[in-house]
Amino acid sequence: MPEILPPDSVGLVTPQTAHFTIPLALDCGRVLPSYDLTYETYGTLNAACSNGVLICHALSGDHHAAGYHSTQDKKPGWWDSAIGPGKPIDTNKFFVVSLNNLGGCKGSTGPVTVNPETGKPFGPDFPIITVRDWVTSQARLGDMLGISQWAAVIGGSLGGMQALQWSIQYPDRLRHCIVIAAAPKLSAQNIAFNEVARQAILSDPEFYAGNYYEYNTVPRRGLMLARMVGHITYLSDDSMRAKFGRELREAKGKLNYGFDEAEFQVESYLRYQGRSFVDRFDANTYLLMTKALDYFDPAADYGDNLTAALKEVQAKFLLISFTSDWRFSSARSREIVKALLDNRKIVSFTEIESPDGHDAFLMPIEPYMQVFEAYMKRVASGVQP
Image 1 (cartoon, rainbow, N blue to C red):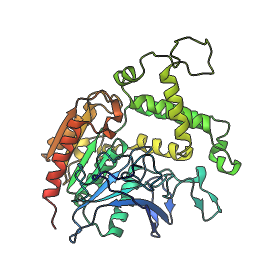
Image 2 (cartoon, helix red, strand yellow):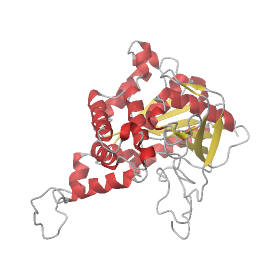
Image 3 (cartoon, rainbow, N blue to C red):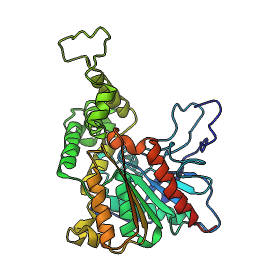
Image 4 (cartoon, helix red, strand yellow):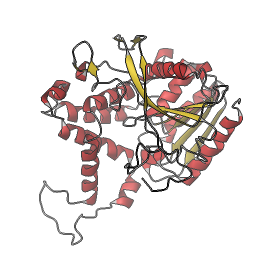
């Protein structure tokens, strides 16, 4: 962390945990008798409780979206580029809430949590969670914080799917819905990538059917491979070419004609990403998150008609996509836009030119930040003091 915090940082933040004792009935048919949600807040809730903004995280995200936990932190939260004083999600204007979803591994109840009935981690016994389940739990968090209606619910990727689900499930509880680099459901190709990632984990000898906690081990190889596969899909061909090309790691450019060492820079990069991910994420959580992605399909309850699914939404929408995002292409955002327009809803849409692939939604790309900031000013103008 820098010795002097930049003026647009939310500064040092402390995670909080909310405990819920009202049972949560899940889509899978099971019930969580009680559960915890870990979250962070930035900014101040106004007297009317009308300036709340909910941040929904993507597959490997968590509650730490902005600021620093300690002076020892090397990096700020995962969306620090967008959240803070004077930034698009301006904490001088908004009370921002960012949480770790159920099933996560950063404090909220999930597979690593001790099951009070057994005294052991839930592990593979933790129930399958859906996006709809997450939104239900998030609404309860809003109730606890005294927020009956969000000024905006915002998310990118899987977070954008949660924002979309919010508009359907609780149409009167958000005034604006911001969906970034997302889709109304996964394509078969995306489901296939997720299945390859899951099989990498499930087939690791140290997975032990999800009970690896009891063996004091981690399915490192499987989780590393899963992350490597996923990371490839987050980048574009252009961005990988620009970053790595076909450059060898060694300046002398000599091939070693083997398999053990990473010869190309891109190989080294992917191995690094995989290894670092293993140290900060749980394999059972990764399985749960990818299944939530696969199952998301709000139109399924409306005869596979997205227009019908969005008929009752009340929020105003902003959708943002990126030209090089082939995992959640602009065409998928346009499906949502069309369904909203079919219902004569108020929607803004922009496609941002970027070579950075799906990861672009996390980056401070100037045109992206400009559009985002302009829209959030519109959101702020409708906040009652």
